[in-house]
Amino acid sequence: MNQSEQQIPEKLLLNAITTVLSQYITETDPYILFNGLLDVLLEITESEYGFIGEIFYTDENKPYIKSYATTNIAWSEKTRRLYEETKKKGMIFSKIDSLYGSVIKTGQLVISNNPNTDSRRFGLPEGHPPLNAFMGIPFYGGGKLLGIVGVANRKNGYHKALAESLQPFLMSCGNLIQAYQNNIKHKQVETELNRYKERLLVLDKNTLLGSNYEFNHSLLTLTKNGQTVLLTKKELKLLEILMINCDHPTQYLTIEKHVWENVIVGESSLRSLLRRLRNKLPDLTIKTITGIGYMLVSPDVLSQKNHK
Image 1: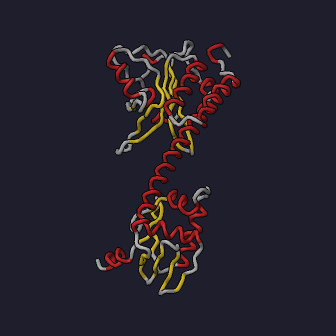
Image 2 (image 1 turned 45 degrees about the horizontal axis):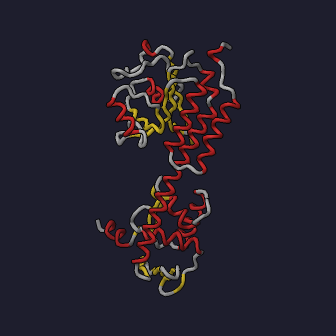
Image 3 (image 1 turned 45 degrees about the vertical axis):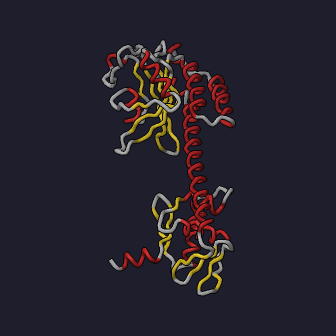
């Protein structure tokens, strides 16, 4: 193996990744963390500039990259202002007919050591620094394409062995993005739960559910024709969250957080709980909204549909 095809020393790579990931414990800004990772990437690959970004999709299902870290290669006053404006919210790369776009389209490694003659190249804006070599590597998480790492202008060019030696780095990028996605989801759930709790405060002490069912919010009990219906606390909590959001889908994660609070459970636990509740309350209609969650249907809505 010649010098240009040498792999990155594993110890150097792992030490660099460990340093950046250790900051994740206290740092919540993804742009700070990914800029640290990009600095590491440029150093160990001996590259001049690069980016790390996550893949998103427009309403028309067209993919694009939102960069969490981009080297400042501004070549004019206009691009310097653009860089400063976007570095905290992410630059957008949306030209699919390009070298980085080829990574999105194929989900595979893209190497071009002679971009000037590469048919996949889109071209560079006027005054942009030269692009002598490019390597774009996809990274995955949860079985799907999450993002792309792109580096440019390594003196001796890029090669497959170099990309393969970066796998620990790519796994770290994927794990970080998944962690941030989960954080966003949990924050959304917390906001939704707080909204439900506020609605609980203004609800009457008792709510009629149809079929002579009556739910008592303060006591967390359910009666039918004045007789207590024997339900476990978790079954009552599940009914409560569905009832608060009656006739509207309630997301799986929101239900799980309401019923189990600080305990992490799998989807099978929620399905089993819902099955038991349906068996005990056959007169109530609880619909499964595939890919979203569950919905309690009020008797008024059902009667309207039956009369159409």
